[in-house]
Image 1 (cartoon, one colour):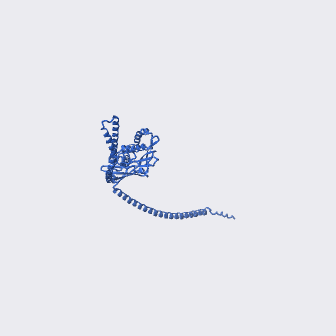
Image 2 (cartoon, one colour):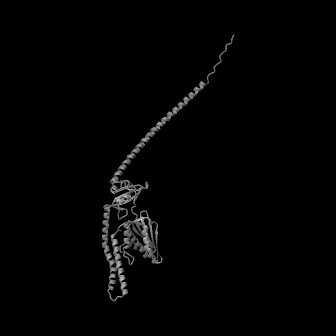
Image 3 (cartoon, one colour):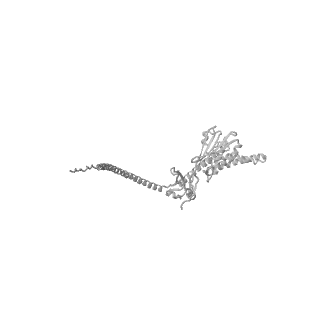
Length: 402
C-alpha cells in the first residue's frame, strides 16, 4: 500500500495584515490631518472675516479723513483766493511753487524767481522790506519753511497805510516846527548878535590889521555856526534819509576809521575799530549813515580826556539788524541828561547845535532801527545804533517760464 503523501501546509501570508495596518494608520493620519486642516481653514476664515471688517473700517476712516482733508483744502484754497494779501511759496532753490491770485498781480507765477519779479515789477522803496509796484506800495514778510528749506512770502498792500502814516508824520513835523521855530530863533540870536558885533568893529578905521583879521575870523566862525545850525535844522525837518544804495559795510567802517584815526591821535585819544563781520552789503543812505555815525564818534571824542581816553567803534550783525556801537571811557552822563539827549536843541557842549543826536536817531529810524544809550557818571558811555537788514532777495539766475 502506497502511503499517501499529504501536501505540506501553506503558511499564511504575513504581508497582507501588515499592509492593512499601514493603510489603516495612513487613513487615520489622513483623517487627523483633514480635521486639522478643516479647523485651520475655519480659523483662517474667521481671521479673514475679521481682517475684512477691520479693512472696511479703516477704509471708511480713510475715506472720512480724505473727505475732511478735501473739504479743508477747498476751504483753504477759497481763503487764499479771497485774501487781499499775496501769498507766495518758494522752494529751496528760490523758485515759485505756488501763488494765490493776489500775488499774480505782482507777477509771481509758478517757476518764477524773486529776482525776476523784483527786476521787472518791484522797485525798493525808502523803508526796509517795502517795495513800490507802480502806484502801489507793498510790504514783504518772509517766513522760512524748516521742513523743506523753502520760504513763504507775504505781500501786503500798504499803500493807504503808508499814505496815512506819511500824512500823520508830516502833520506832526508841522506841529513841531511851530515849537521849534521859537527855539531856533533863540539859537540863532546869539551867534547872529556876535557876528553883527564883530562885523561892526570892522568898520573902525583905526583898527589894527592884526585885530581886523582876528575879528574877521571870529565873524566867519559865528556865521559858519549859523550855517551849521540851519543845515541841521533842515535835516531834522526832513524827517528821513533820502535815497538808498547798496554798499559794503567794510567801506563805511574804513571811511570812518580813515577820518577819525588821525584826529584822535592829535588829541591823544586811542581810537580803534572792532568789526566782527563787515563783508556783507548794506542797503541804505550811505551819506546819512556816515553822518549819523560821525556825530556819535565826535561826541565820544569830546567826552574823553586827552592822553588816557579810549573810543571804540564796534560792528556786529544779529539775525535782523546791523549793530554799530560807539563806546568811550569818558566821564559819562547822569540819567536826567540821558533822558534829554535826543530832544532838539538840547546839548551839553558850548559849540553844539543840539540837533546832531536827534538827526542821528531819525536816520536810524528811517533805516528800520534806532539808537539806545548806556551811560553812568564816571563809567563812560555807549551809543548803540541798529540798522535793519531789510528783505533778503530769493535770488536765482533762471528766467521765468514764458
